[in-house]
Image (spheres, rainbow, N blue to C red):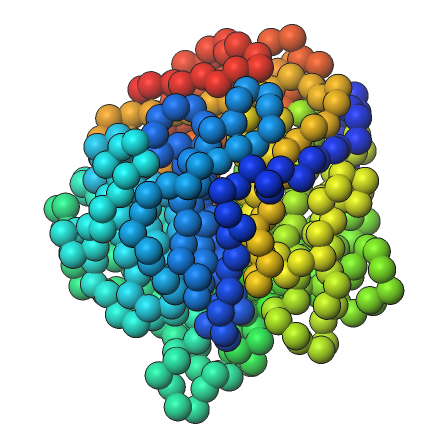
Length: 495
C-alpha cells in the first residue's frame, strides 16, 4: 500500500471530525418500519428537486409512507426541512434520483416490496407517476438495489432492478433468491424484461467503467444469508448481457457497494459491506485485490461496548469529511432485526484516512456512533458550507440528520457536469482533479450504497491547496480541457 500513502501525504491533517444532531430540523420523525420484507432496504435519495442549490431528501418508509423533505437550511446554518407534497406510497424500500427523460429535471426510481415505480419530476419538487407512460413492466418483486447506464443511441437509460427473495416460492425463503431484471429502452419507453439469472439475493448493484476502458459493467453484491451456498458476488457485461466467467467467485453476506479512487491512479476501488468483514478491494487495472487488514477498513466487530459478535454493515459512503484531501469512509451498521449471531448494539463507523493512508475510527468522537439499526446513508453538503453532512436511515427508529461542524477544515471544490439530452447529468463521465501533487478521479454514477443514492456535484477535499484544475471525460470518452476552478465553490461544467 505504499502507493496509496505516497499520493496522499501532500496535505497535512486537519482537526478531528465533529457532527451536530440536527434531526429536530425535520418536520416529523421518518421511520423505516415493517415486517420481514423491510428487514432490508431503507434507503434515502438525495436530489435538488427545486433547483435552489440545496439538496432535498426522499426517504423510504417501508410500512410507513415515504416522505419528501424540502431543504430550507441557511448557508452554514442548522439543517432545516419542510414537508414535501407527495402522494402517500407504502412498501417503499428505497429510491434513486436521475433524469430519465432528459428534460433537465430530476426524476425518481422508487423501489418497493411490490410494483416498482418511476416518478417524473415536474420541477419545484413536484412529481407524477410515469411508470405506465414510460412502459416499465411491473411485477410484485421485492426490489432492493438499482443502477443505470446510458447506452449509445438510446433516448432513455438502461435500468437494472435487483431483487431479493422470491416471496412466491413456497419452499423459501432460504435458497429462494429471485431473478433480477434489466430494462433497455425502445425509444422513450421500456420493453420486455431481460432477466438476470441466476439471482443470489441482490442487495446492492453498481454499473461502473471500473477499468476505464469505455465499457461499463454491472457488479452485484448478494446476500449469502439466503442463497446459503453456490452463490457469489457477480459481474456482468452488458451488451450483450453475459456473466463474466473469469470473475473470481467471492461469497459475502453482501449489503452495500461504494466506489472511489483512493490511490490517485484514476481507477476506482470498491467497498463492499457484509455481516462480519467489510471488504475493500484495490483496483489493479485488470483485477481487484483485497486490501490488507492493516489498512483499517474491515470494521468487523463493534469498536465500543461489550458486544463482541460480528458487525452487520449496510450502506458504505466515501467522502472527505474534513476536506484534508484524503477520502474518508462512513459505514452504516445495524443488526438485521434480532439475529443472534451478530451484534445487537453495533455503532456506525466513521473511518478517517490518515497521512499514511490507513484509516482510524472516529465515530464516537465525531458524535455519530449511533447504535440504531442503520440502513441507508448519504454524505452530502446540505447547508452549502463545503462540509459534508450525514443522513442515516434506520429500521424502526427515526432517521438521523447530522450537521458537519468540524473546525479548521481544508479547502474544497464541487464539480457538476451537464450535457445535452438524453444523458443530461453525464452519467458515466469522469471528473479528474489535480491540485499540486494531489490527483484524483471520480466517476458520475447512479447506483451502489444501500437502496438509495445521490444526484448532484462531486465533492473534492483540497486541504491547503491554493489552486485546482479539473477536466471532465465525458461518457463517450471525449476529454474536455483542463480548467482552473475556484476553491470553496460549486462549479457547473457544461459540455
